[in-house]
Image (cartoon, helix red, strand yellow):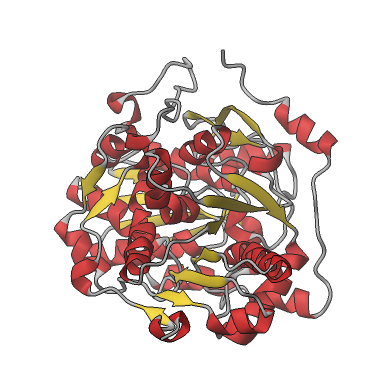
Length: 458
């Protein structure tokens, strides 16, 4: 019997096979991510330094570079069962449409009400906030996927949620905003006039459409000035990549059931949460010398942190109040174009992924906006899922790699992450369908201007 008949369209694990531990890839990294630095003293930050901003248990996870597996609390496991395990899908229809000998799989994380993988970490962070006895949490959101997930998790656990949404997304995606409000969150366009940092950014950049860096600054200010609140983040941080490893662990378990080993693993990259989650168990094998994989990060050409950024310490936020992280960055003052790359418009990249990229364990490419939506449309028409703009970056490169196999005749196995749906991104699809969408690539001069603001850290 051929493989095509043996492997179903959708591979599901049983509830009993949902991961009961997260995998901490840092435990297998020879070169660990550099420590966070205090923005005032430039000294490494420890547990007590981070307590005013983050929840206690999350700080422990953030700083843990040695424990390979960390238990998932039973309450979180029970919540995961509402929408996990997520399916691993064999893209038979896409393979046929492309006429490629490549075998294409995608891990689909859009089968929950929040619409993306972000719920995997949102419920964890809300859980630890509740367990600590806090009243609520503050956060930022770009495309709105993270804000939606955190709103849903906070409502489930009965805590307050304050979201600062990048202004351009707040205006482009009113329905995403309203989902958050339906779940009880307050949603404020950022930069706002409600915070000191927001007022400062508006004064320095009149009419700005905002950035994730701006929204982070506002959320952190509110958290540190409001009794009983802490700040939570949907990407970049070590703790978030840890929680998202349920994606990769499930994907690997599903592939292992059928004896399938991917040659190429592809994920979109903004801050790094879904990419890090998908690749972690595979990267662990690579780090331990057990197997080798070609791992590709795909980022928007309009915000090319990996491919054109600097590997340096930088502020995680535009207001320069957050800890400094060593990462690939375009500079905390970089304001990306008001395009439809959504949640991929953060100026920096996860310290974990930055270190792995710097050490040569993965590669990175960029994709322009119109090409991304062209790939999204092709995918939607044959696979029946309307993908989010972020995930569509991975689709674009997966198609590119499959077409290379068509040219060479190689039967490579491709795995990519489809980590969100695009049903609230119809303004973007409309612009693409109307021919009004354009591509934006920052000039070297623009990037150099931003690099000039990088902090001087020895």
